Structures are given as C-alpha cells and as structure tokens.
Amino acid sequence: MTVTFSLPLPPSVNGLWANGKTRRFRTQNYEDWIHEAGWELKRQRVPGISGPVSIRYELEEPKTKRKTDLGNREKATTDLLVTNGIIEADDQRIVREINLSWSRDVNGVRVTIKSIEQ
Image (cartoon, rainbow, N blue to C red; front, side, top):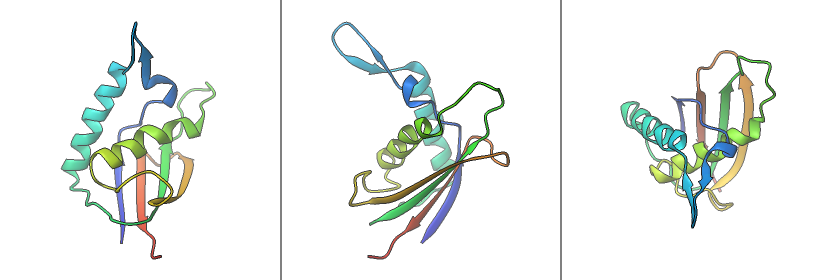
C-alpha cells in the first residue's frame, strides 16, 4: 500500500520547543502547525498504514537565500504521523527508511508512505 498527501511546511526542529522556568514546552508556532496539519490529514482522509514503512518527504524549496537544514524539517512531520495514527511508531521496527528532498513543485511538504513487506 502507498499513500501520498500534502501538509503545510513543518517548523524546523530548532523551533519546536522552548525552555520555561521548570520545564520545556511546545512553541506556539509548533502548536499551530500541529493543529493545521492534523486537520489537513482529516480533510484528505489519509488512511493509517500498519507495519514497516518507507517515508519520502518532498519539501518546498526555500524562497530566500537563507541557508536551511533539510533534516530539521523531518521530526515534526514524523511525530505528527504517529500522533494521528497514520503510522504505528517512529522507531526502527516501523520506520525503515526516510528520504528527504527539496522540490520546486511542492507547497509545504508532500509525504509518500509506502508499506514494506517483511
């Protein structure tokens, strides 16, 4: 089984958490993205995939000359997939491969999840 869908561009891992006086907490930007992206999953009726998977993320090419780390965009999206039951977990038993690339043809992030037979 393979499923492809689009989500808003995830925040960088550098902007997911902030330090409080006694604990770390999600930033407002991250909370807003989780809410918006979660509704996109529901709107597109993305089905869950059980068992091992391969995930491909195609991210919107940055529109500025500012240097951007491609790998920093993966964590929020993968965690969202787990939280919303699209994949079972993000550990080595389930996520067997992650492929990341920039794309000029994408707004946000295009996600392709492919079930792996084992």
